[in-house]
Image (cartoon, rainbow, N blue to C red; front, side, top):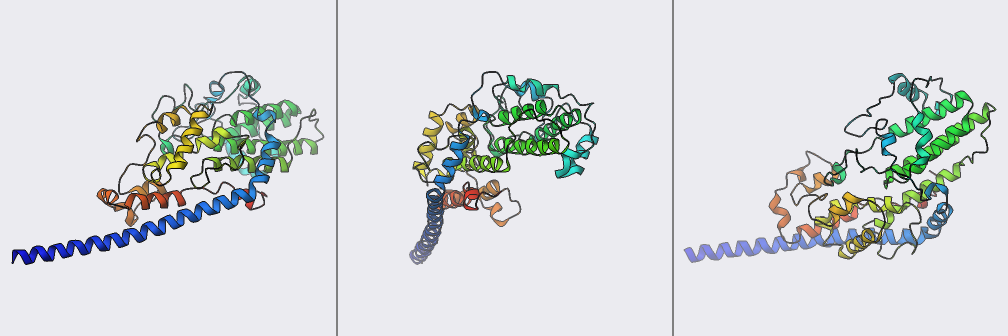
Length: 377
């Protein structure tokens, strides 16, 4: 009887293993097929868009916005005026001004707002700063472990509001050229934050310059020869900067879009390694050559990225834990059935490669989209 029970148990176990092996093999095949499809699409987009991307990069490569500048960190000048996602700015703006700008919307250059009670004197010294370090002394990120998606984010909205107020003051006083110059310096500094969001805010600041210049023209005010960015200028810059993280995309081929790519925004591209780092426990074994390329890129760069560098060289910091709720941690979902997956599941054979392939193929942005869509927006 015992021998018969053991035989039956052995058959059940063998059958279970076979079923698991077939199911796991099927899941891995499907996941790898999706990953290969994503890689093929990224390669095709790279081939199709490379000439346009490099044309935009070459257009901006030698622009003064990207020129290295002597000087210290701009953070001491901006510390009290720009908040973070977990704390407001120390020197809060009057609610009447922020509400007035919100109500004005796209017509903000014509908003009748009194800015005389706001200290905007720091704008005149921004040109003395060489860079803006988001992790510098006094920043909530300074000296803290790298948290990736959990890190506090700078409130770049404050930056845009301050720029609008400075331009409004210039329009009200008739001294438009100094206001445009100072906002342009703020755009330059945003491009030194080594942040894709900061780069996009710099584009937004150029848009504010263009709108303020148009309003000044309608009032007959002298721009003093300020080189007003055109609408195509801002579109070109946006395309160029949005494309730079293609260099650190998990789906892109190891062969670069161009040997010189990216010519601008390289540090912002490297900062986007936060996403590959976050899913590295799963995607790393699936795409070892891609992660080796990222390691070399970080090692050879002259970007700051101190906390990211430290995390990349260790295990655990900035990475999603090896737990069953990996889906919820990566997507930010809650309450889904997959969120309750027991931790032991991910240690079963084939499971981590399946998760890694799925995450690599789905957690990667389409950085060349603006070129494929014609770059109109």
